[in-house]
Length: 79
Image 1 (cartoon, rainbow, N blue to C red):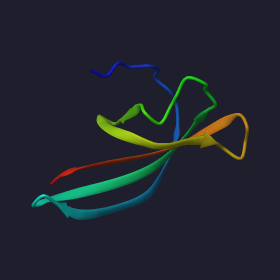
Image 2 (cartoon, rainbow, N blue to C red; image 1 turned 180 degrees about the vertical axis):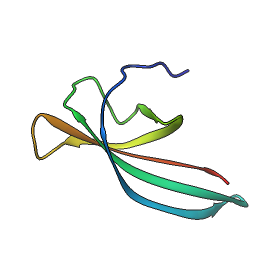
Image 3 (cartoon, rainbow, N blue to C red; image 1 turned 120 degrees about the vertical axis):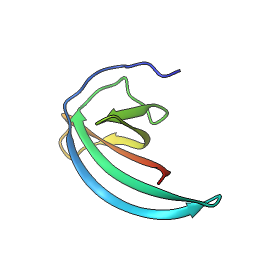
């Protein structure tokens, strides 16, 4: 079960979107960068919820500005 760690403000930047087939189903994939204030309690093993959609965190890294971190997250599901 997933639990809410925190509600945060973020700058959201779309990175890519596309479609692919897997096991006979068409999947729509989306990838975004979420820029947040730096935190020490987040990890790539967690998930992110934005606008009611769960995103898998694929990278969590420092931003060029040390006060911020970037989260790269993707989602995908059957159409």
